[in-house]
Structure formats: C-alpha cells, structure tokens
Image (tube, rainbow, N blue to C red):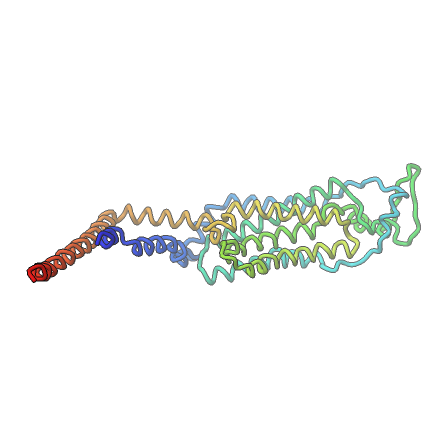
Length: 340
C-alpha cells in the first residue's frame, strides 16, 4: 500500500517519458530553419566571415604567383634529387573537386533531409576556412623554405647536362616555370588540402552518425575513416610520383587535419558529445525560440503546470479512495470470522 501511494506521488515512468521527450526535442525542431526562412539573416550575421574568406583567396593567389626562395643546391645534393620527372597521378584541378565540392555535396544531401540551414551554412563556411587557411599556410611555408623536389635535377637540367657556378651552386637552364615549381616541395599542397577538406568531412560525418555514442556500433567508424583513407592515398601518390619527399607529405597532412579540427570546433561540438550531431547555432536558436514562447505565453505555461498538478492530485485521491474502500469491505468479513 505504501509503495502504491509513493508511486502515485512520483510516477517514475511519466518522469522518464518527459525526460526523453525533452532530450528528443531539439531533433524534433528540425525543418523549421530553412534557407528561405533564415538563410538571408544567417549570411548577414556572418558577412564579416565571408569578407575575410575573400581576403584569404586573394592571399592564396599572391602566394601562389610569387617566386619561392631559391635554396642553394650543390652538386653533392643532386644525388638525392635525380628521380624521374613524372606527371601527377592526381592532377591539380582535381584537388578542389574532392576536397571542397565533394564535402559540400554531402552537406547539401544532409540539408535536404534535415532542413537545417545552420548546419548547411556552418558546414560550408567551416570547410572553406579549413581549406583556405591550410592553403595560405602551406604556400607561405613553401615560398619561405624553397626546398627542392626529388625530381629537381631534371627540372634544372632537362637535357641532362649539368652546370655549376664557382660556388658550387647549380646553374639551371630549364624552363623558368618548371624550375620555380621545383622549389616548392615542403610541405605538400595535395596532402594539406586533402586532409583539410576530407578531414573536415570525416569530423562532420562522425558527428552526424553519432559514431562515438558509446553504443558499440563500431561499423560507423568505416564511414569516419573513409575520407581519411582517400586523403592518405592522395598523399601517397605524391611520393610515388617523386614530387615530394615523405617529410613533405607527413607535414602537409598533419597541417591540414589540425586546421580542419580547429575550424570544425568553431561551429560544431566534439563528435563524441551528446549534441555532436548539430551546430552550436542550431541549439542556440532552439533555446531562443523556447525562451520567447515562454515569455509570450506565460499564462499558458502556468495553466499547463496547474493542470498537471490537478491530475496528479486526482490520482492520489483515487488511490486513497480505493485503499479506504478496501478496508471497509474487509471489515465485515473480519468481524464475522472473529464471531465464528
């Protein structure tokens, strides 16, 4: 009887259902923030970020055009720089395709499913920042170091005829653009761009599929590792094509992924967080809308609470009534049995 009375006062199942309902509420709000309803205001709020993005593009173009530092290359150093001059397995024009356009296509697919403009906008903005910051840092280091590529000999002496000055330095007679490109070995641009774009995509997907929700669905990691595997294979081709030393590829990949992680965390929680499936801005918008609804309709919220209290009181009174009725029904039986 005591347990029944307590359970009527504290309905555990009802409380549990309420908690689960509030936990699922943010996902239930998906579809309210679309490009049509919030796209213009969201872009306006981040106009400074988009302007800085244009500045990064200009910086990247300048760093790519200027001449790098022409490091001293002597005759003894040419032993390690005589690898054959080959074409790129992964052409330069293909890098933005898989490092930028492919992730954006994934963002669009998820947008059409969830209708969350915050996720789409911040995904694209974070991706572009990750790639462009990586590109600027990569080309700045390339120009500053001027490390020769493994195939520098054939860039400098395309006919195989060596020439050196009095100081022992090379006197190249190859094509200027080819020689210029030969002094841009460290770090690898293919590797840094690949790990920046595909690394960002890997973090994004890990949050969306809740890969680290502690439920033991290890198969989700295959989706998380797939973009990283693609980036790694691209990086390996740079060594196979003799365009980079292995140190160039390692440094480029590390640089790209670190920048991608920083940019991702500016907009999204950690992938292993309970709210890792959505951007910060989405949860802020949900909180703001809930606060506004509470402020606009305070009487309705109070009436709901009063109604819930009345229902609970009725349950308690009903429980007491049943208990007392049980006592009344059992009393004659007890007296009669005692009389016998």
